[in-house]
Amino acid sequence: MAHGAFILAPKGSEVTDWERGFFKDADPWAFILFARNIDTPDQLRRLTNDLRDTVGRDALVLIDQEGGRVQRMRSPYWREWLPPLDQAETAQDAARAFWLRYRIIADELRSVGIDANCAPTCDVAQPDTHPFLRNRCLGTDAATVIANARASAEGHLAGGVLPILKHMPGHGRGKVDSHLGLPVADVTLVEASVTDFAPFRALNDLPLGMSAHIVYPAMGDRPATQNPDMIRLIREDIGFNGLLMTDDISMEALNGTVDQRGLVSLQAGCDVVLHCNGEAAEMEAIAKTCGQMSEAAMTRAEAAAACRKTPEPVDIEAIEAELNALLA
Image 1: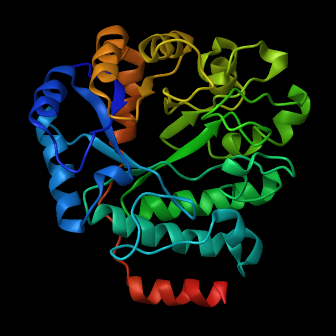
Image 2: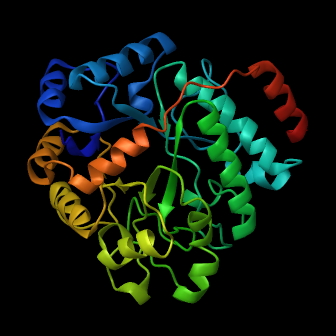
């Protein structure tokens, strides 16, 4: 049975009666949570259970828990983290430090029913990368990003959480915040292939990826999320065959109503549309316009969900002590 070709978010810390009925009928493939949805661990466990109950299955529940500026679960219940680029530039044995970091984060996520994380950020930071993104990156050259991203992904997987590669095929050249406008990658495809695209090519075996709202002029004037040629590049050149979700469809890098943005993205080759603000009218429009997942998208979705596994045994105190020593 095909599910809705979208990932949706509840508006608050509890599933409302309206959301319960709407999610049951619309059947989103997965859910995503934000700071507005989070209060305490017990509340968060109830919320993730209730969301799955609305669709009657073990749907994925996503979050952005990169650490640093972008982490939805914060103290006093959950750990605070350095920005990823700060950790990459200061840690001894950075790759090991990232494995430890995301193994601990995975443990925190699984304990409250979250089993997919929008990380690692595999964009290669440039000197002029916009500040909204730069310190969320894992390095300033492709080789460093590859090593740190692979370790981050393996830490997630060991903890039973699916990592999500972002932002494909590479957002590091963006000088504009894509929440507010459309960035352009001022780079040739030849150079981009050996820098920006390289981390995604190296991690193309992972099950989930997120597209970038950025234009590569050599491939036309559409952002990658809505550009069939760029999606083909992600599939064929980068070699990614996992489930490809859009970045948040509400971001102002895109034009048109949110449902039309979503439809154009699906027509370009994305598998599912990510909608994050929890606004009822927008979710209704997306469900009506975007419809169900394609057969190919469902195949990739089932393969991705099957990658979830029981977390490997771990001594959290011991690996936290090891991480602290590497960061000392």
